[in-house]
Image (cartoon, rainbow, N blue to C red; front, side, top):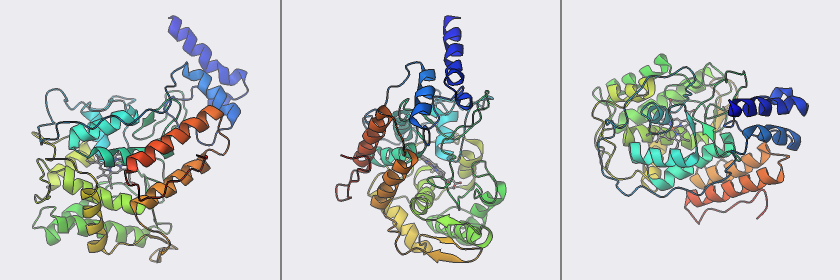
Length: 375
Ligand code: HEM
């Protein structure tokens, strides 16, 4: 009762401060674009739940290819306010309880869960997670969502659904934002897996079929989306995601990725948010440099180049786009700085710290480090 009264009073603060549009601001919504006064009005509602930036969690120690669809992690159907989004990997982890089932997460929860559930390597998991968090996370509460939703109070939320950065065009199972819904499963697009498997994989998603599927999805966006955007980070993101399904949605996949993927397994993750029965995670971590090798093999085999459409069927390659992971980091930190033109000192310090963690997550000291908020 007492906590309910405190929560109700906290929700009234934005009204008292003259910001009624910020009432019931969710703790997991990004603070991007808010003025200092708005950030102060919002953070008073968080009731002290502001741990701020946290260090990377440690790597898991057992990286064997063990059973992960186990009794401790049963699949459960969605409840009304559970949040899911464009990532079949994270949606599935949430529906099996590897991350909170409501879809509201900390970076550390994601980084640990993707290792436990799929054996994604600690380094790449950290890099990927902070690429998303720097666009979509709340740097003071250390929370984000794996999608977006409208709360019961009507506040829109950001999250992984945010279009135009990590989430982008030419997805394997979600529409381009210009063409429709960019985060829900789309059966028509999914059919391209079967087309590719039948054409070059004897009905299975061999590596050649994954490459062909990637080409089909890129060509479809070139043909139908006049605003198709396929530059860093989306360029490498989309191609790495094709590598992901081949390397991690295969039960007991080995380091040399020899086993093809089935359409049935892909559907379980993409459509049902469910691990196939008896699913064992891959053997050994999928990490740099393995991720780079597989990703750049697909880039080469698919003949993919970063660029964008200027009207349908008018794809213009951007020669300035380096298409490297260093460049993903560089663009991300500089983009994040533009999201916060007027941060409070606390928010600025938190973002700065998360940018340092992001560089650490990149784990490649040959990449130039950037300090848009100063050293
Ligand atoms: C480590 C944290 C992760 C984050 C922050 C993340 C985030 C995202 C985001 C934002 C998208 C949307 C991109 C788009 O527009 O298509 C996406 C797509 C995707 N993710 Fe994740 N992801 C993570 C881990 C994983 C893991 C571990 C897997 C697989 C085991 C995975 C598999 C995929 C796949 C296959 C897609 C493409 C979906 C499609 O094209 O339809 N992700 N992810």
